[in-house]
Length: 223
Image 1 (cartoon, one colour):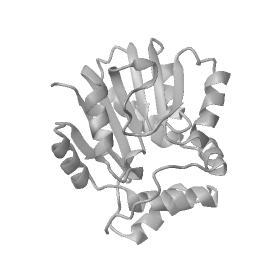
Image 2: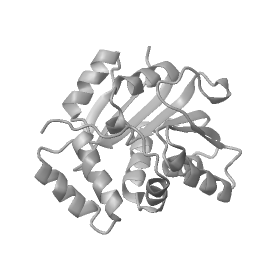
Image 3: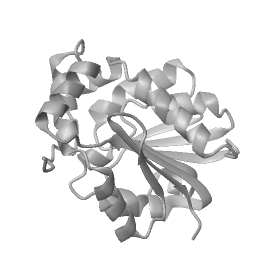
Image 4: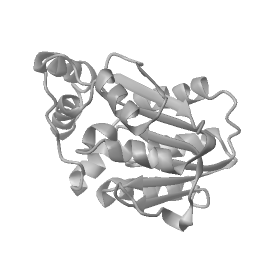
């Protein structure tokens, strides 16, 4: 099945609210467990960047798990960031987590920060019409020896398989979320396509399926 791109940004207020209220605990916990598994020697200190952070659930969980780090989250849609800002304030994490509306590629990052000890990204890649901007940003801003973990959906073999995944994992979710999930599956990249992107960007990272619908890319900066 060929890839069918979807809009890069989720800009509607209703969409942002639905995503903030949806239960993504399973994939978000998977993301954090993968980070701990792939980077067991991560110090938990320094600056952490989350690209396409959305309502910042992963970043908030990460900050709780690693209390000595400070975190920067970027997303291109203010509607997705607003619910996250409220939670950051409620959790009294504003001194450690800052969220910014910014698009990739970004010529500069907030506070002039140039390098990060860890860069995270979950479910951003499939939105991008030019996926190379994600890999180029990672390459530019990860510190020497820094950790990189990217997770996303991968495209199933057929529309029927995509519909099955929606029925399995989003049957009780609002219609807007079911529709977005289906479109995201059709827009996602296959692992072999991601491997080509990594090679073209000069990134020697690992890429493999980590669930029946997720693919992960991870590695450390060695250049």
